[in-house]
Length: 98
Length: 372
Image (tube, rainbow over all chains, first blue to last red; front, side, top):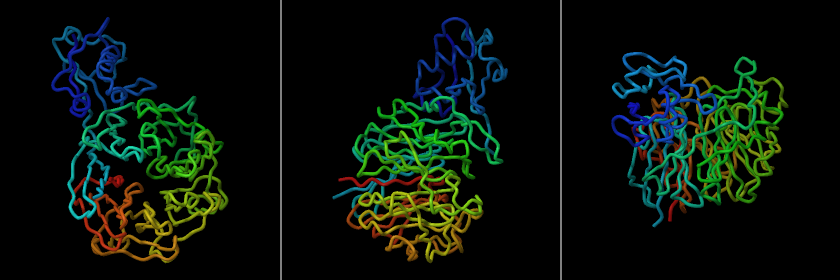
């Protein structure tokens, strides 16, 4: 089970409170986690990554285990504590805008 | 007694203002989608409880929300706006080719007859249509594929398709406007398009006085009883056409300044129109700090200033292009919103004004529904 923390605006959109728990088949990567997240919460499609390019939106960041994973390739395995559910995968709206 | 519902899109959410036909007391609900930019929300003429809203942020992109109960509850519908085929390029500000990139939905125009059909005007400029209540969107790519598309260039606010006008007498006829490409018309339900910009003068921006495209049209309005007559607030100049856009004539007349964004038509008097003059394209506030609506009862040229109830000193707000609307009660109500967060209403066709909301976030759009 993968634990995912959404930013506040997307928790409201997805109508969830607290963490989201996802079952991810195969290797836990950014892509597989986001695929599972969007399958479970279709209203989040397009909010985290571009529909066409599947690239992360510029003001969306991914953190876990005190590391910024935002620039990791999408198929890189996530840290083992995330894959095991010991640590959450954090999706963060970048602090920007003045 | 009839009711009026005012749908207000702002920089930080949507608000729904409701009143009875007297229009002197207003209930405000919201913010809906707090913290998100609501560029536009509008109700279906065929089912007033069906509303569509364009919701976006720079962080999480574009969403479309739909309500089936007049804005009490909402559900997100499809937000996949993908250009048809290979998007190609338009011109960037410096004249170099720039790839077409979807940014946001500026305007949603529900069909006049079918609640499940709605058009979306987007940035970078294109027209999309949904025929299933927003569950899927298809581009009407004949517009962007018009031969001039590669020459379109953004205005200061982006290259947005901000105006969609449906002809009630001819379901196949659609007008749209793009900043800063100009106005276009389709006579075959959106398959093919022609630019309708003859008579527009934009020498400050484009030296060719006969330029087919490149005009910074801010807004177009139509009275449903006279669908061949259109009124336009251009970047500078107020214009009208009496032949469905084949040619335009300037009707700025005695306006103190003919720059502005909004224009609208009285619900029962097709020759009565309203504008809000703004000082200039570099000073987006009213001249002399006086917020004035100007009304022409002659279809332009002769304008009367309307000031009763509007601030006449130290007022430096703007009124954006989608932020004026009218109701259809016997005494036509006129409404507009400001970047200062006020929504002003007149229940007597503009003679007297009062704020019906004072401290909202910056207002991006105002629409009105007249309900039984």
